[in-house]
Length: 280
Image (cartoon, rainbow, N blue to C red; front, side, top):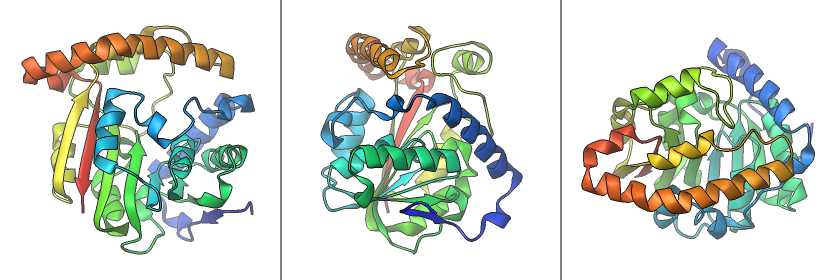
């Protein structure tokens, strides 16, 4: 068994939803990282990553400095955020239900000399194998909408310390036109659907019951158009070019989106994503 990978002993209890997601993401990861140069990330550290977009700055203001903090990276995928938190001085625990993702995330951590700061677990958000009150911070990107939300939220809150902070970025499913695009239109970076279901405001209310000092904010109206610009990144060089296009577009659209949602609050429900923040 590779160093720093731990396996949940309750794998036989996982249901068909989790098995399906495992198979799906193993396949996606194998294809996406056939070229291992794709393991390189475009931001050199925690502060740089969380100042890269308006939604990340919103989260950064909430989380603050992570040096010396115990961070749980939920649904770590290929390990980008695990490495980012480790570069910020955090002690990182990362989990994912895909063995393929865990293997790639470990390679990324090793590439950046962060393997000793990150422990990887193969487990599901609904059945976490960690002790109560372990983590200062729980973080995830596009993870909770793949889970049974009430179970995963309860588990994440359970393993957080009193006063611990949670921050999640999830797709918002309250724009019918965007939902049609998600289901039927091709765009850069689109992956096959698993058991995922974009967030509703009912999901946000469900999470609110588990946290104090809870708040959320919707992001991306015009800026969601970057998904339709460029092409799928098959190599690291192509990824860099696509990232440059995205950054240029967001510099224009982010201020416009902020102006729209400030002047017309009802437009927030048409945004692409939502950041959900709370304290235990």
